[in-house]
Amino acid sequence: MSSRTARQIQMVSRPAGMPGQEHFRMVEVELPAPEAGQVLVENRYMSVDPYMRGRMRAEGVYAAPYPLNAPLYGGAVGEVLESGDENLQPGDIVLSQGAWQDRLLTRASRVQRLEPFDPERISLYLGTLGMPGMTAYVGLNRFGEPKEGETVFVSAASGAVGANVCQIAKMKGCRVVGSVGSDAKAEYLNAECGVDETINYRTCGDLTEALRAAAPDGVDVYFENVGGEHLQAALNAMNPFGRIAACGMISTYNDAEPVPGPNNLMLIVGKKVRINGFIVFDHNDMREDFLRDMSGWIESGRVRARETVVEGLENAVDAFLALFSGDNFGKMVVKL
Ligand code: NAP
Ligand code: FER
Image (cartoon, rainbow, N blue to C red):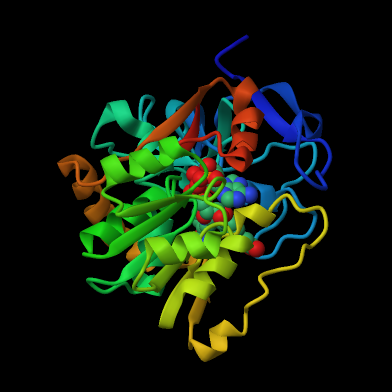
């Protein structure tokens, strides 16, 4: 093994329902030395994210599907080992789209050099200071438009996106209700993130009733991460002129066949609800504001950034699958 030996996880077949180890394989390749304009990067952390399940389908919506038998991609933070580019030096910490591999050769123009505010916490650039944190910031501010005193309902509320939504909404003076899949996650949101009410959707019984009890004045903003029953309950509890920031619907991502949706979509009309789907990558105009605000909030302790760290590339598929069973607590990252 040389310092240019790379291990990569590749997809060998497309999953129909829940993915499993059988859809992936690990391969070892020998990378060439970087040419002019290229860098060799050794990853320190890679991200696993729900959107990756979408990329495993044959038909992409806004982005090309993952190829078969070739390296996958996704957010990663690593260190430059060798550089053929004058703007990057060995030792530089960079953000790339080179997840699912421990080392990669890439064009220098495709990585972003980071000046981490805390070199011990570079994984934050995959979470609260990265794509999921920015998703929370963009979705809540631009599409939820919460006003002081309003009630914000967040699903998958303790996750990489959700926990940031909850904490930003609290700073805006909102009453926040979070839905999660365990009592430990609920306790964390209450105790550490200032969330007013939590619902454990696995044990609460009827979700609409639980939400009405947790949000007696109704829901003004629903930050949608889960879909299905959560969307149905949110519409039932929504106030007139409520806003839904439609960020994701993770409960549907592993459906092999489409399942029937909420039975109450007509409420969108009578309640004059505004639903906005959005993809974070379309909102780079907010990036500077996001980074300034979020780094300040993390440094001052106003935003907590909890992570689940899984060790080893060989465990990356399990880490990814854990997103769908709720085994992650906060942002899931793989330490390489
Ligand atoms: P995450 O919340 O850190 O992890 C996923 C969580 O979803 C799990 O921990 C689990 O938490 C919950 N979950 C999984 N399956 C579920 C089910 N069947 N029913 C209810 N809850 C379920 O993931 P994330 O990265 O923050 O992503 C959250 C959502 O944002 C996803 O829908 C994702 O696709 C979306 N997203 C969208 C954009 C965009 O640009 N639009 C960008 C990033 C993320 P519990 O234990 O609480 O169930
Ligand atoms: C995500 C879920 C879905 C996400 C993007 C998508 C960036 C895009 C879906 C589509 O194109 O249909 O978490 O994060």
